[in-house]
Length: 471
Image (cartoon, rainbow, N blue to C red; front, side):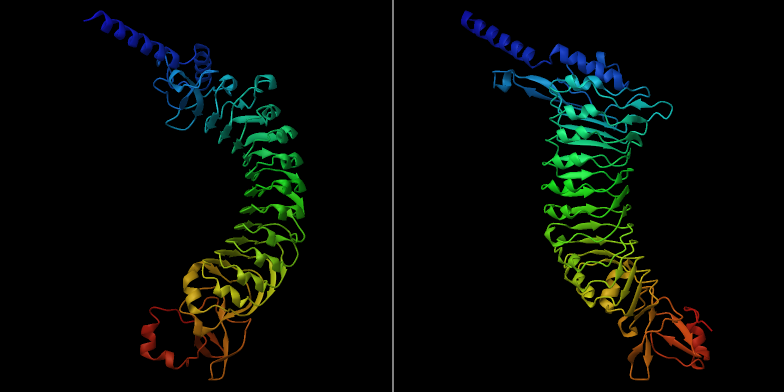
């Protein structure tokens, strides 16, 4: 082989060796990673798995090349740990004595840390603690998810406010996480999603959450927050989801809520809220879900609800609403679900509801509604069992409009042979449409009259095998 060729081959081999060395994980970072793995998981002997965790990535580990300072070439970039997942297969499981991995925050390029279904040893709890603020100020962590850990205990660490790079913070479904939300939460200006649901948090909702102007999703549901809804939440102009349901909140819905013009989902159910809904609901032009069941509102339903043009679900059950159902609800062309059961509503059912072509669930039960149900046979068949009108003694259904559909009310009485509906009987013996009932010695079916003597004939006896006659 010519001398020149040998020299070229040696040069190429040396370059390949240099590139391999350059891509290998930094020894200090590797040691930190090993300490994290050993603190959390005993799935394997991590030190004997291989010399380079990023070279053949371990389960739950994600690495990316990061060029050295002043070198934009990815060819010479080292691989660094950017994501760690623990708890759910195929990721490493957490051992019974697992500690919260403080050292993970020392991994210089870590962007995402997930601890899901990790701390669950019923015999020993794990404290939710973080390193001192000075050790977190240089963190590049963007996403922290601590979810479904029944043995994780303590309060939300105030040091969270030092991780200024956080964009997604999820601390959810950890029943032993108690106490108040630290006021420093307002320092996390980069937060896009904040989920603190299904814990045991108490105190008031911090008004400083209103300083998180990049927030798109806020979920504080299923805790024990008390006091009023802070008006500062109305400053979250980019907010699309707000869920404060299942707490102990009192007072009214703040008027500033109508300033959340990007909101698509609003859930305030299962609290102690009361009073009128704020004027300006029509400004919530993107709202699709309004869920406010189980609050002692005790006021009439506002007609402005019918001006929330994109509304798909309206759930206001068991909230003491009074007066009539607004006719304006018939304008909600996108409405699929209307739940108004167990209120104090009176008057007629708006005929416009029958024109809502996307409706598939309607519950108006347990109110004081009266009059003829304004739904034709096609509407009744389309909703089927998803329509409940029971518990309204003054309601009845026109027998000419029904075909064995059970809507929970009786059939209207008819006057004479002309077939005109004369009145509604609150004493109707039947609770489901299309069944037989008796009044004044006459047997009736769907509003008509049959002679009792006719039904004694043998042919009627055969019919009785498939239906129940109330004699």
